[in-house]
Each structure stands twice: as C-alpha cells, then as structure tokens.
Length: 195
Image (cartoon, rainbow, N blue to C red; front, side):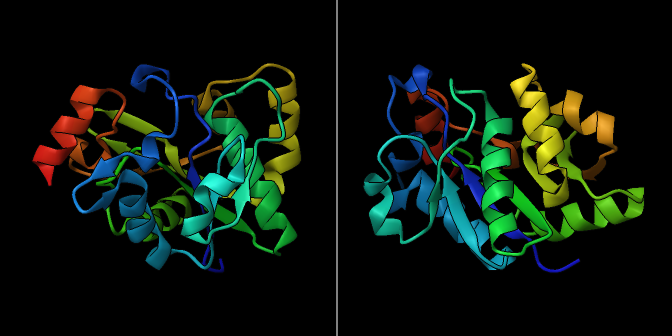
C-alpha cells in the first residue's frame, strides 16, 4: 500500500458550540485545527480538509478544501466519501481521516491503522481505545467509494454499520484521552488544561 492521503473531517455543524468552525477555535498558541494538521500531515502523502460552506475561511491553511457531495449534513461518512472522491482523482488507493476537533490523537495513527488492516487481512481499519471505537479516525480504501455513495443515498449514517459490512481492522490505542474531542466550551477548557 502506498502512503495514504489524509483528510481532516471538519464538515459538521458544531451545534453544541453554537455553530461555526470548532477547528478554528484557539487552543494554546494555535487553533484546534492547526494541532490536528501538525499531527496528521507528517503521516500522509498529501492532506486535504473536508468542510462545507465558503472554503475561503480556510485559505490561510493552504490545503485543498473538499465539500460533501451528499446534501443535508449526512454525518462523517459523507466527509469520508468526499475525501475518497478527491483522493481517487489524485490516483490514491487509500485515505486516512481524522476529526478536526480532536487535537491529541496519536502521532502514529496512520502506521497503526495500516498494520491493523494488514493483520486483519482487510483494506479498512478504525481506531479504538478501551472506551470504544473512534469511527472518524480510519483507513479507507478509495475503491469502495461507489458502495459508500449508494449506502449514503439509501440513508445510512452510522459508520460502523458500513465498516462492519466490509470487514474492518481495529487499531488499538491504550489511552482514551488521545481521542478527546472538543464539543462544548467546557471541553475547550479541558483541552487547554490537557496542553
């Protein structure tokens, strides 16, 4: 497998934060999103951002911005599909996704996902901790994008229902806090303390 392309999933509506882009909130000396970029970029061949609305608000990041192709905020799988379509156009075989609101995920996420898929004899893997699976952190084969598009058009929204259907490895990480995500103002204060 070639080094996968990376896609940061920032297409949600951030309703618990009052709307807007959670990733652009300040954390430490940067933003939540700048921390995510710093962690994912060294692990992938090329990096893009999945976000909806006006892409100009991310211009400073100098990343390609790919919007969902499924209307109506269909959840993280819609962002995965947008990333797959973008990466397919670049000739990539796989993408790795990370959530834009999760600033502490492991710096070895990508190699662990690849090893988990290989160990399971499949093309897909999700991150997991003792607290459960983290379905926005995954290795996805671009070749399944048409199957995913059909599933989304048929109303599927739950990531694990689709991944389980196709066979999915689990990359086990020991620390639940590594996948701590910022959903509320209190979470942002906690993230500041975690720094």
